Length: 239
Length: 239
DNA sequence: CTATTGGTGCCAAAATTTGTCACCAAAAAT
DNA sequence: ATTTTTGGTGACAAATTTTGGCACCAATAG
Image 1 (spheres, rainbow over the protein chains, first blue to last red):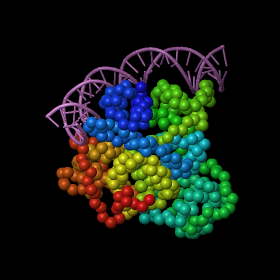
Image 2: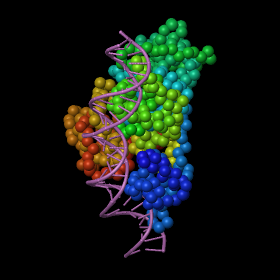
Image 3: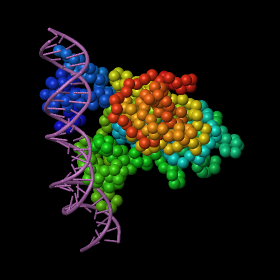
Image 4: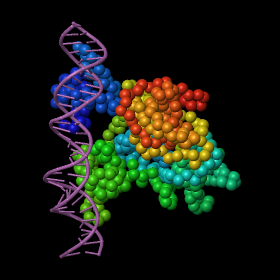
């Protein structure tokens, strides 16, 4: 009898009997009192609420509401969580990143096949690198608060995005591009876009974008993006 | 690495790569060929449909329609995910942070009351601020790779932590403190600790800590931490 | 005070998991 | 036809995890 199976048996018994003592459970599942207590502990760690009362007439009781409602996340939500973990890792050590990955793995694994395909397609649009071109923090501007509300739907729904861009020399231009991917070179975020007017890819630092607007033009198709050397799609990173 | 985690990693890799050989999987998850084959066997027993083909160009392939199961996250895992989202927000705009928060909210809601209280208590140990004291990226050192494996259990289990600390002037001292909280002032991470020898709180920049060790001393109790002005517990932030 | 019941720490025994090695079978390349 | 690549099996010792047993604490009810 594996630990996992025994724990399932304990949950089932508790659901059936309502209240039960540790010793009764031990007899039921054919394990020692000590092992059952350890299992109770493990189940509580996993989120089951198990009330306990000492003394005569006491025992263990499983809160019927604690049956974990599976958190059903949308693909975009899982993607968003992945982004933040990926970005933090790229920025250097992230405390508890191992645990965060374990959690994400569980979530990913709970996604049905078709949603997983969607997620993978989105992950192909996320690139991370470690070498930041930025050496002086004072050069890091604030992101236009209007950017995210426009960028997010444009990126998710493959709609062209129009904005003003201020390049390194301070020149401002008006752009209308297809947001194809995101590149993270901490602490900078880049929008990797296909520029139809120029027939080529262009990178835009997100903190230099202003007055963004989702156009009502037709949706575009995703293209294969190419980078050099130390930049790789997040999906290909070993985890 | 426990069998369960390794099997999760194998499923993720197979989903990511489409087709993969046993040896590639073994290298990826850092286990022997034999172990991977055993894991494949176990996964098949659990209901995953994994096609295989011998000979050149052969390999393993996971049927994308394979089972899904509810994601049961532990409190520590949820905490870890929260940290990375919190850190990214603090570092400035995070694309899709709204979605990430929505996802986290769903996960949180799926946690039963008890575990939610635990999570809240952990969140009280997480502080974020926006003003970084750092203006020159060259001053940002690399975190000691040994830090996280020592810090994480010390923080989670309330065990004292011993380490060498190099202050701003370059002086090295040996410390033994109680890790009470984490403070994020991107891109810096601080360990907020109670120093029993000095009877006061002290902040330590994580990238200046070296040779960390969890002591086998008694566990400590969490204390109320106080900060000024623009630093607040993550739990108090509107979300 | 005593009996009952949950809960923890510790340690050695038991069970399981893992790595290594030899070897088989099928398919593709030569 | 032979070699190479790739999945798969069996066996056994080493490493790791799980388990049982024990002593003991805390709370509660009679």
